Image (cartoon, rainbow, N blue to C red; front, side):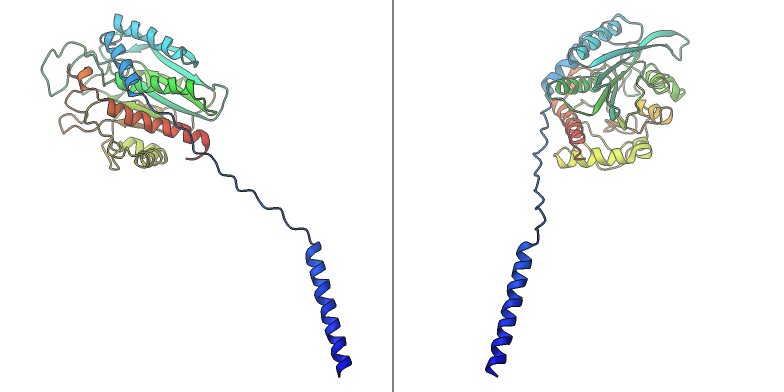
Length: 332
């Protein structure tokens, strides 16, 4: 019995030894290193610079088709965008307006990384209204307005974005398009009498690369401005709406970007969506009442520098900067 026990014990020890030897000889799979991505460096939007860009535009006077102010502003916009290192082009066309007149007009286009096929387009209009025809005012109705907010603010935000893109490069393609002849339409007339520049651009794109999506800025600088979700934006570009409004909430700008539905506005984005087949949203101030959804200063002579609020400019500009740099990093 004792001999059998010794044999059994010896056999067990041999098996344990062999198992240990086998385990030690098996190669272990390499550990996958944990890569921690650094946070995206999002530059701060400079509202003071954006405000100065509005002041410069207003200094030219009304930028109405056919006026000296319109021509002076066009030249300044082109040079300002060229100074950012962007590839700038002027898309000229004849704007046949509802009065029967025809004016030379220019869409101004600035491209960052023009060779890249993955692109985002940011737009605003730069011309101003030729008459002060708001139902809320009877003052000097036949005179053109300065348009600090209605044209000046959206254009200024995009100029500041261009300046930031020069300072901190991105790898994706960014197009900035400033539409002309948006506001020389017939009040109460056909919707297509407005947005002549965006209609022309939608039919005659400047690049062979179709943008992934687009964003239009219109009246984004006034005191008390709020941006509910415009109806055509939701209809044609709901994923973009959800991306922008959720990002605005995450970075503390939800008090401007209201998560509620607003009315549908036949703005430049409508033509880009329906003619150009590019999903584009409209960030537009819809804080007014029934008589004027856009605020009491809209299409009046109160649309001057006094109506501009740097906090509003900063809110819109910071959301767009966060969007662009997060898109570039693949984080959104």
